[in-house]
Image (cartoon, protein in one colour):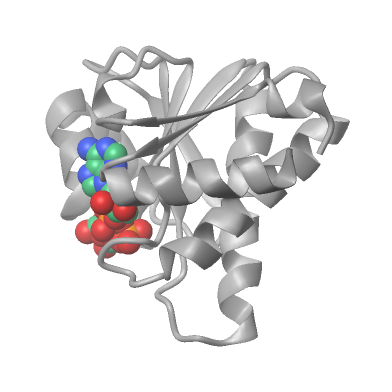
Length: 174
Ligand code: AR6
């Protein structure tokens, strides 16, 4: 992968709700009405206005994305995407690829130059982190090849194990 693409990617350990980027991505569900995991953390940190705006959207199909304001978060926007519940079929990877592409597309449309992704589908939804990591990085790199307005993509991982998987994959494609 070209250096100028990889230079836009940052991988780190931490809590996505604490990041000061233009947009953070939420691993939501089709209702967009909140839940556990990173979704719960984002709603708690953003405050009740976020749920109000989400209710007005009326849901989001798997693989698609919707944007709201960030309210009490440091991020200006929250991009809510719905990852697949892992079943071990070919559709899983297609849906997960769509999540990354559609989230990045919304960032571009809203002039968000920096965006942070948690590991979509890798918690409750059971996606194996190794496979999900490859999809996250490959689909992001492909997107960045043709869209220059996104300057920085952060992959924020909750555990050191997940962080290592991302760093190892990045090293492999460098
Ligand atoms: N910052 C960064 N990563 C986090 C954080 C955080 N604050 N909290 C958890 N993670 P999950 P999913 C990691 O389960 O698998 C919700 O109930 C976590 O360790 O949040 O897409 C929704 O409403 C894991 O690696 O999302 C849906 O119903 C990753 O984020 C369902 O869960 C994703 O885990 C979505 O499941």
